[in-house]
Image (tube, one colour):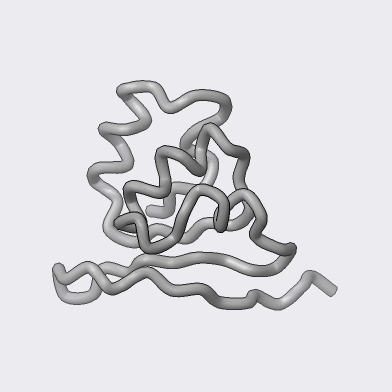
Length: 81
């Protein structure tokens, strides 16, 4: 499960509760409201400004591997052909 699209306009308590169960987070460019919530998920290593200004085809990830959460990191995806 990824958190993509969990926060359509504002971070409701239900959305925050759902995000609490997400181990792996993959985020493309998001708006400021969502970025402020997701900044906490990335343990403040990736800021809301980073998420808002993310270029096309770039992502930030936080993986859960064997019940251990990885350090957040960035990556580049391939554009659709």
